[in-house]
Amino acid sequence: MSDRPASDPETTVSSSQEDFDYQHVPAQALDAVRMRLAQLTHSLAKLKDEMSKAELPQWYSLQVQVSVILTQMQSLTTTLHHFEELLDSTVVYPLGTFPTTAHEGLLTTLLRKKNIPEAESWILDAKETAGVDLNTASPEEVKKCLKSDEDVTKWALDFLKQEHSNYAFRGLHTSKKMAEDPSLGAADEYQPSIGRSIPKQPFDVDSILKVIHQGAN
Amino acid sequence: MVLQLCLTSAIDDDSYELCTSTLCNLSGNPPVLFSNFTAMFKPNSSFDIEQTNSKNQLIEQNRLKLCRGVPLDALENDSEKRDYRMLKKFADDDLKGFDLQILQKMLHGSIDVDDMEVDEEKPSEQSWILSISDIPAAGSNRKVSSQAIIESTILSTGGSSPSVIAFLSELGYTLDYQLLTVGVKFNMKHNVYLELSKIWRVEGGEAQQLTKGGFLVKAFVNVAKSTDIKSINHGTNALLHLQKELSGYIDLTIPDRKSMDSRLENLNDI
Image 1 (tube, one colour):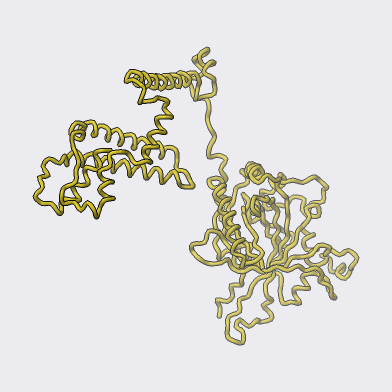
Image 2 (cartoon, one colour):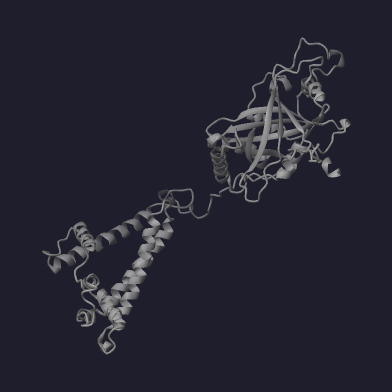
């Protein structure tokens, strides 16, 4: 969060202060982060918008959106990690010419280092849900926690694969029967009869209606 | 005045049984067997009717539709139990075992001229329905066909010659053609009716099937008042919902409005 306010004084003040040396402002790093954040907020806003509609979108469209968001988050964390050192060592301060009294509200917002109360409560909520107290837990404990989470995921995936292989999803026989007699599943015995039961139009409806209403043949 | 909203389609004979059981399951009601006899009347041309009125406006001459239900027991006198399956045997022109003379008796009071004046066996215990229909409303962005129908019931014809045909000839109308409709009706959700019917054109003792090889499918909603926009929208939505539900199986479409026009065509002559 500390990187975001830094991008703004640069643009706000530049018009009034021409002789300031901007060469030390990490513009490239900030711009890279800004772009990724913009993408992410856009995607999140779109998802939120669709979820609040009366008619929910199809599950596959939701899945695609979520996977896009995950990719964007991944990209953001990579970028942040890449510029970590530079951004951490950057100190943000207002220039002397900044109209401090007139724009006090703006200034305090831009220079705020703490999260806004809303974000604070989200973080707290997430921490509570995770069940790990980061203040008291040692790095080992956190690592252990992450590892157990990965283990559960792995187990679930393995279980799913195993269960899937236990059943025959095609044909007319159970996988138990097929294991006893391998010749059973070889040919596709089931032929669905589609199309045959759809009625044909044996005559033109309009011409029948014409005879009914006008008697003309 | 009734406003009838409708969509039509057709199915072939072979799909009738599956179709009725599908619709039966869909509606939750068993099919209702019905049979109607329709006689269409046109203005008597020998009266030389003026085609414009005093203000020089065009007068549209329209056919009158006279209709009544015919009990199938009367047409086919075999006291057998009937259900929707009986329609399967009518693939051809031939109406097996049907006594078509009954229809003439109903219209003329009697087929035998000598019997004409005998009043003891009145065939008019059941009343006739007289209706006149407008051409369905025009417009390219319509989703369903909507036709205004004015209807009245003839309870008694009375007079010196009590037949309904004589009654209408006194009004200046002559018999144009006759139709016999036998079909099944389903009461669907939201007051939508769905009819599968076979229609014959009756001439003398002969019948010619119009719907050879299949059934006419008609889904309709009747709205009592043409000014009741709320009910019209409701009915339209109900029909569209049914259309969506049946799409891919029975594709209900809007019939051509010109084919549902029962006006006389001789107006082109002026």
